[in-house]
Image 1 (cartoon, rainbow, N blue to C red):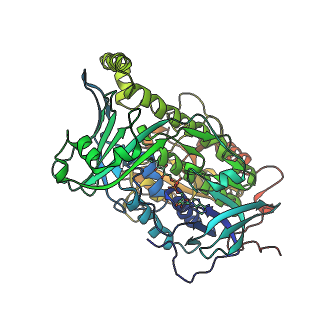
Image 2 (image 1 turned 90 degrees about the horizontal axis):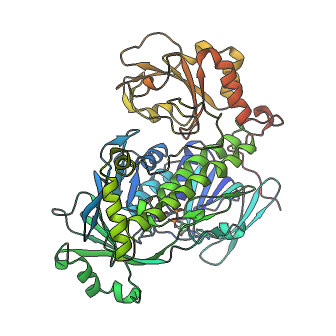
Image 3 (image 1 turned 30 degrees about the horizontal axis):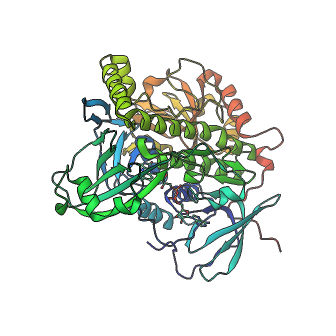
Length: 552
Ligand SMILES: Cc1cc2nc3c(=O)[nH]c(=O)nc-3n(C[C@H](O)[C@H](O)[C@H](O)COP(=O)(O)OP(=O)(O)OC[C@H]3O[C@@H](n4cnc5c(N)ncnc54)[C@H](O)[C@@H]3O)c2cc1C
């Protein structure tokens, strides 16, 4: 798909945010910024979507972020994966993860075709007035000045152009130019293993319906189905094997023969990758931010590389928008690194651990580790740890843009507010995030938040970009003056006492919560976080639709 909305479209000279890289992460960030009304330019050195075999699995959190960015459930095809099985050639099945069911309105695990998702996201961007996306522009240089960043981009004819942006996001992938320009080299060791990825198609009838890890130390092989009659195998290269040798049609036919007669399949894509496990020291410098593979890369054993990039996007986009719209002080932007980096690092560590546990490279280690995992599965606590995915690091911040939480609360500040099916005032059944919209929201549990606030407090919340919403028991439709939704399956209301107020950030992280009688202190707590002493919302200039001029 061509990147440019119109072939003749000119490169703007000044924007609020410049996103470098229109891969899945850059495109999602641009879509989120567009929803918040931020004037955004997203450039990519390529016109076309990258077709190499890359991400195949997404979890419920990733799907929720794509929903936040405006993609409907059927925007791209998915296969819901009910379980992940681990097989040893000696011990048989020794481990299992139960991925059946949904969390926060989305399946726990799906497979998909990455180019489909990228096409859908570019389509979404093309509908957003404040976003311009242009292919054929390569970032060369960035110079940060006191009130903007001047980026130099080169077009396909070799001409250089300057763009002045209030903020720049480097979503330019693993070999990020932005990362190099801000001097943020990757930390951590390369996961020095080469893997052959084979994507095949035409197996509509007999493909497996789950993910399997064949944990044979001689040739570990994850294998999974994907939409469009596709299937993927990942084969670890053995010492001494060359990339060319393994990529040959004869070699691929030999490798997939245990599953199917190779003649019955069309090999769509193949590539040998060296996986890396790296994270940079800091995700930002001044007005420049890194997101996605530009900030962190991981072996794909737990399917979290792109997912982590999408989490970056959700976290960063609203913070930039709130600063640019004058709802918050620039200091909140420091919490992007504070909140995102530890979790991204934890996911990399999990991927490395899974690589070692599930696919050890020597037979003796494999026998003991797989035997131990099989034994651990006999007790319910340890079985739960692996089977119910308790091993996956929770997306709960230790520090950041939230008021520290009290232990024992069901609603945990600094973690995701749950999503459930609700009915809105127009009697439409929706997922609750769609009812919350692109807002910072004060949610009242069985109480109208407006009824608990003074006029000054209401105005103060609105100046911080705040809205109000009441969530009620299903069938209770009278009283109150603010918007309300009904909790159709009673999923959200049991999580806090009636009368509780919850401040939910636009990325659905719980910022604060308190009983209704404490509404004043709740608002003060949020205000202290969003607006520092010397930068009240009134004193921050609003730059939306008024991009700075490029200086001569
Ligand atoms: C084999 C494999 C399997 C994987 N499986 C999974 C999985 O199951 N689940 C998962 O979540 N993740 C998975 N991943 C990881 C996932 O594919 C990546 O994390 C994701 O594609 C990164 O997206 P991105 O937008 O950050 O970077 P990219 O997709 O690399 O996009 C970067 C964009 O920036 C552009 N660009 C680069 N430099 C410049 C420049 N100087 N100027 C302008 N534009 C520039 C590029 O052209 C490109 O379009 C897998 C990866 C691999 C290799």
